[in-house]
Length: 236
Image (cartoon, rainbow, N blue to C red; front, side, top):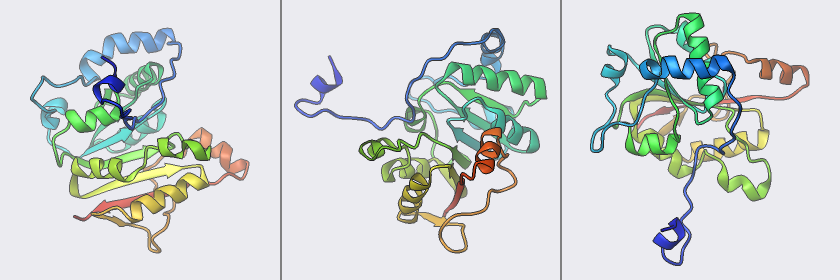
């Protein structure tokens, strides 16, 4: 039975955290997926149960989770720079997951785990409440055409779903290189219940040192493109 049939006369559309774009795996990426996912990958918990962070990493430590890490370069760099923290990356594109695992292995990074699945499903069904110290979403699809703005990931309901899985005092860090999306993010977040803007003027913050400057950003800076960072603390 189709989703439309199940919902009767109304078509129930879900927010998804991605648009599926299949890419070709390199030999290295395919090898990394085969060798490393059994150890460094996280799969769905058994029905009726939730992930246990201490068991996943073999220790108790603050957890940073990134949604949509792309090819994983900046996430690996962040994990390497903060060995006292645990990191989880969620990405649906297999080449990106393979690239993350390859680079983590090359860099000797062991405090990082990967999930190849839809982030919305992970937050709704895999994660216990209050398990995340930080959530970061860098350069999500801006859906720049006005008629597509409803597809943007940062929406009021999605933000509240994130907050439920975060600790009090936890940090949500967003970044985009589309000014219109930055304005949309700021509007959503400043109105979000239980979040406090860490910017002194309730707008944007300078890029924090812990978020690596990517090659993409460096190129954008040379071309005069802007990047907007936002950080909000969970306060209620």
